[in-house]
Length: 427
Image (tube, helix red, strand yellow):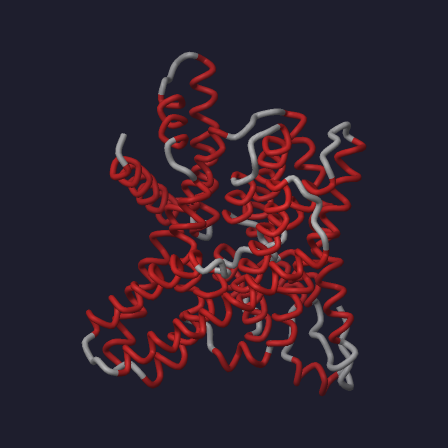
């Protein structure tokens, strides 16, 4: 089976499931596609065990030939991050820069430690003694949040602009930070040495700061080219080259490619859009990247649902994953709450912010991809099944209910709150 065959099958399923969801079900697209793919996978497994259907084995063979980690981390991710960053208003981002920075750095580190410690204790109680370093790896891979499924819901629920910007900005940047932390820990696992704080801090700074600096360089180089040509076909091609070439070159330079592409996308979407493009080019560019975003997201969530076919199907692991869900949410609540408590020293934090950011912190394909990149062994199988269980709950349950949570808390803009409550807000 060739790569073209695999792509053809995935795109066909994505199109069919999208049609069914849009015509008959009406769920948010990402959630609907994953739900249908997961149900399809379960049906194939049941039919296969009953001896009526051989398609399950064919599907497993197809998925086994497609490396999910490389497909997402070295293929789709750059396009998805660039498309997301392209439409983020830089001025709005700067207004929320403090909370976004703290959530995507300190929040990710706290979450990694909280989840790792809680996972180690919980799994030990269940008789699954995972080494502490693997528990911290699990904390690092489950901490990044995925904005794809929740942003549309937040807009429909009438979430205020500042909260929407915070969720978007945190998700764009903590993907890169989470990957950096994960890779730093993984390097020590593969090398057989115990990590030291100095070594981790050095790798973190090189990857994260280097990625941001390189992304700024790539973004300004792209702006320089865009400003000197007025042909939308050429300008769209330049942005495409920015993603593919910029992402790959960042990997070769051993800096964070996700962070580099986010920064490049922000610069092109703001500075480049206003000063380097004609109105026609802006419309064409937006249309192109919206289509890329929609198509890749559709294929990704279908692939995530079908990936269940080749995951470890051990009931004890599924139970462990289910028991880990409240612990992961608790760790998210503690990390967000720690950041919010610090921010309250300097200015008010909107009502309901901690609860909403906790429940809106969906886990997606990046967590599964990172789990699949772990070295082969019993630890890998355990963490893959636990991660997939948490991710499925996150998207299917949290994704469907976060809109109601936002409406119930009726978050008001800070100015209105400070007028009506004397400048004090609470969660």
